[in-house]
Image (cartoon, rainbow, N blue to C red):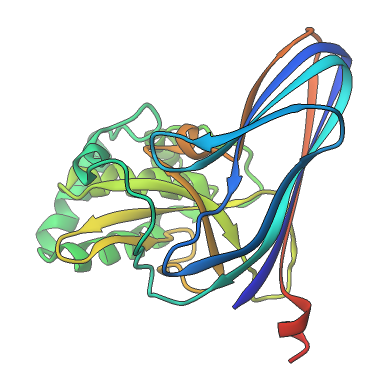
Amino acid sequence: MRLTVEHVTRYAYSQPQRRLIQLLRATPTSFAAQHVVAWRVGVDRDARIRTGRDGFGNITTMLYVDGPVDAITLTAGGEVLTDDRAGVVEDAPEPLPPALFLRASPLTRPDEAMRVFARRAAADARDPLERMHLIMARLLETIRYVPTLDAVERDAASAFHASSGVCQDHAHIFCAIARETGIPARYVSGHLFRRDGLELQEASHAWAEACIPDLGWVGFDPANGISPDDAYIRVACGLDYRDAAPGAGRRVGGGEERLKVDVRVAQARSQAQS
């Protein structure tokens, strides 16, 4: 599928800022299931820009902006050709060993109820791939998807106890439970093309990947109950949201900050008309 993405982040401040620093993880990498045809990252004012990769292999863009700044708009987007590989991630940058993703992080630390859930899943499905699909299916039934919640940095145990959450919560819970059963798992951020025709979204999407013996990394989206197909664009990964968030920053200047995000994911016009 040929998909286009436009990700716009707008910040407004109640008083001018003297300096802004932004770290963006907004650029996808080409691998077997996706080919980045064209991509750009922009800012609506003068800025020093530095690109690189972090320890997880994610492409990063650092923005340094001198004030006074009362508002700023960041854009990222382009065109990506995707292929349905049943969630299997091949030929992506892998600088870290899978065993590192057995480590619990602040947002994926399980509580006793989650450990019980994990033990039951391990007992009901001994095959690792079957177990991950079982965990995904049970989370779809157990954790109600509420896309309007604004709690991307809520920890997995809190979301599990609430039995509801956004896609970030589902990904955190999946990672915590998969790791508890001995399977490395990581958080993934990216974009999802909505087949129901809804192009404009309020945020990017999130899911998880598990490292399956003899198969490698495989994606699982417990918010939708499927492995990623050609409707998904994979952008960044990490132990949890904080490692793969589309943006993070610091500012010097005080006052309050207002944030608005718009994400549009659509089929390329040439494909949509064919």
